[in-house]
Length: 117
Image 1 (cartoon, rainbow, N blue to C red):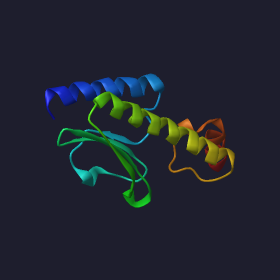
Image 2: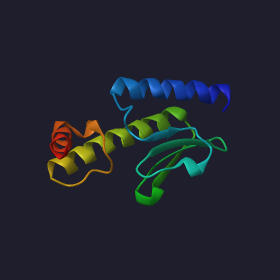
Image 3: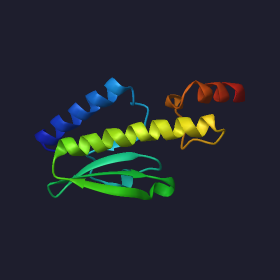
Image 4: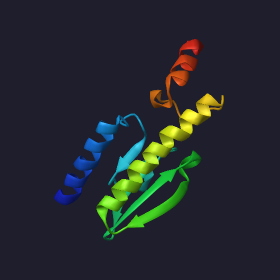
């Protein structure tokens, strides 16, 4: 990874920490697609384009957004993170199973998991 991408990665990670989203599954500028896992939000730099997408079960790609401007890509990446949190919180409130275990799904999720123990 070149120095500019490393700088962008650090910037994005600072935002993720600020938002409290460190527990989410995500990948920033990793080149190897074999690192894609189920329910992950990904940003990659491919041929001067920034690709942002999410994966679902079996690591299948859900939409792929392409940007020339890194900050537009950051915005989409962070929006996908927020959508992941909100969607999974709604699933838990409706008694449905979330994508994966994470305390960001809210106190209801934590209470449900504590009851299982």
